[in-house]
Image 1 (cartoon, rainbow, N blue to C red):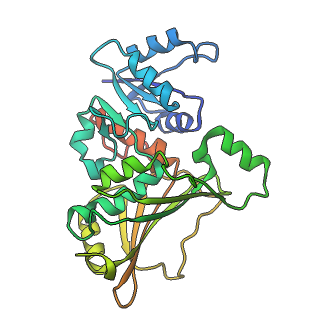
Image 2: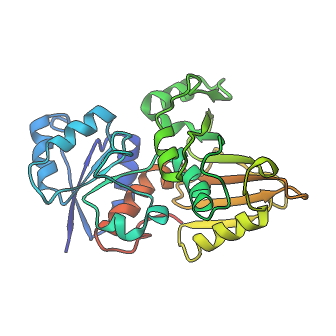
Image 3: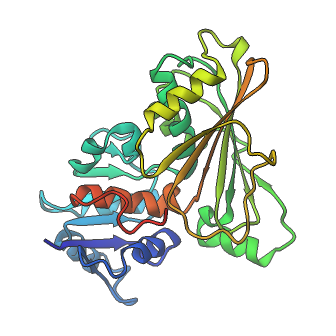
Length: 309
């Protein structure tokens, strides 16, 4: 059975990369609108209601408006915006943490944010296991490729090649914090420190831990073992222990599309400190790859179909 898919916002970065991952796949048929009709609400509503699954690659308000256009009880939704990530009635599209069955059977799925994907994947299993406290004020340091900011930020970085680093979210209250708090199982919002570097794609998310100061925290070895067990058998998530042999992680400007998620636990020799590190493609597992993984599950297909791993 062929699944009819409409990507609303297909001309944006996320939409284009989703379409690339679906190209040539006979399991899906894309409903498309030409340039003259893609912003016409009537045409969009028709396409949305004709689709088995609609993938929203839109700003938050536009995503809410698109959901309101659904006039049937059959069209299912994957929303890549922030609009519904902590909304009642929506399933969070991180199947490794939420459960594959929950995502596969959902009618409304919110695609996770790129930074939250790394943070939640690292912290949620450890909080559940009682190895990290839920009421700790975690700090999240993260850097992303500039493609995560959409066309405006892409143009800014490509026009101004003198930008070496862009720190933002300085007013606090970043839109990713609610989902990071909710799905990591925390009672205290983390302090989120994001930045952008002059690479098109890629992302590193780090959570530094002073274990000796944290009530009930496990050792670096225990943290690694818990994460390795939690993700055992995952075709998408890998877990390693210790620093790379050369002592460094790198983001490269030449990086190609990748839909995996690499987690690392690095502990100090005395076991009093640890660094949890997640590496991913902000356009892959952080956006388009995650949406395709969810689409595969909703269609009853192998979750890795069409992904670059």
